[in-house]
Length: 225
Image (cartoon, rainbow, N blue to C red):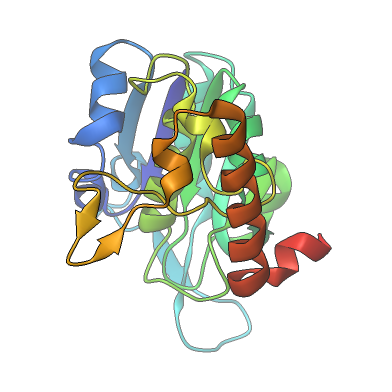
């Protein structure tokens, strides 16, 4: 998989991809992540990529030309399955979307900034708009990092245990059940006996019941969905 991220602040993405699962996936050749500085596609001598909004109002708008140049340059190198715009009014990012995107070949992620991008870019190039939540960040870079991490960890070979991702929260529409490790007794708080019984079917039943119980208590809207 190849993921190309377009941003005006590439430095914000140095950390998230230099560690942990995403780094190991890249080292294994499972994913290639490229971060592109949008200012390099500006013809302005000051590398400006934004301008005032037509109609007035506070805030600047990302211009069409630099974004179009960048996207077209990338498209000349390979084919992309999706061109994603990280936007507060996009579809809310959920595990099912991460699952779907993990099956794609190549992705472009455009990070919004300022008051967003010129609407014509959204109409001409964007195939999908995604939001990581109902709040506004300074830019789309953190959202792009979240999306990339969620997708990359699903790629076969990214995790040490191939079945691990299948038991994550939300994969079956439920949050994950409680988990325990050694010691079996911590300050009088003991691990449920069923988990040390070695009885696989009983353990799986307990985990399912606990997942339903926790979902009902903490995220009841998931059960309605």
